Length: 181
Ligand SMILES: CC(C)(COP(=O)(O)OP(=O)(O)OC[C@H]1O[C@@H](n2cnc3c(N)ncnc32)[C@H](O)[C@@H]1OP(=O)(O)O)[C@@H](O)C(=O)NCCC(=O)NCCS
Image 1 (cartoon, helix red, strand yellow):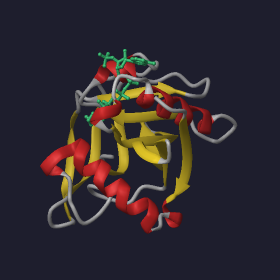
Image 2: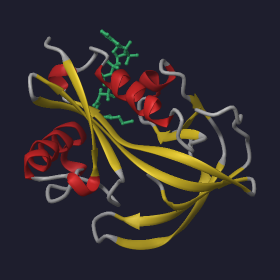
Image 3: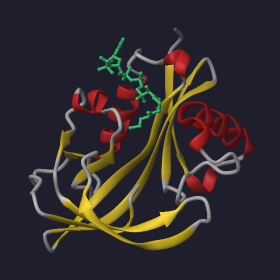
Image 4: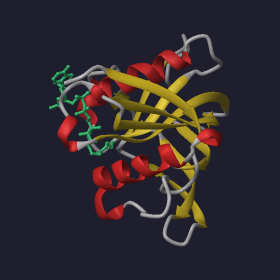
């Protein structure tokens, strides 16, 4: 395999040279559930990390910079969305490299935790993420109609967190102050 190059791109700078291969990658990785007419499920992210091998897009993480409320305390969170690597390039550490890049981005920035909802916890556990059991409150978005669909309030078993500041994580109530990324 060639050298993996990872680029960071702001959502404002996504052009058609990025959009088209990214749409293809997301549809390939998430299958028929992924919308074919946009590169997000529910909401546009703030930035993305893109992994290239020989100038071909093979991996992706989207990130939201969010304020959330943990037990009444304001926390700054980088929320990771749509982590994926093309099937032909899996088990080569590309997702792990993308996660390391996202973590490096948090250094010397005002970010307390990285948070994600994982269907496949292994790769995240290997990268220092922990499963947590907070009761979450979030804005539901119907991704088909792109409309708000009420407030969700329950423990989400897929929630994983990594502290990137000296603040420890707490059990309890997590208000996402927005949608579930
Ligand atoms: C989940 C997903 C992103 C993992 O991507 P990946 O690049 O294969 O991940 P990594 O290579 O970093 O790690 C995955 C496996 O490869 C192994 N691995 C890590 N580094 C490696 C390396 N340098 N060489 C070989 N194998 C490696 C890990 O042990 C891990 O094994 P495990 O999953 O059996 O525990 C990818 O399978 C995917 O896109 N799936 C479809 C979309 C999806 O479900 N996204 C996640 C939503 S939570």
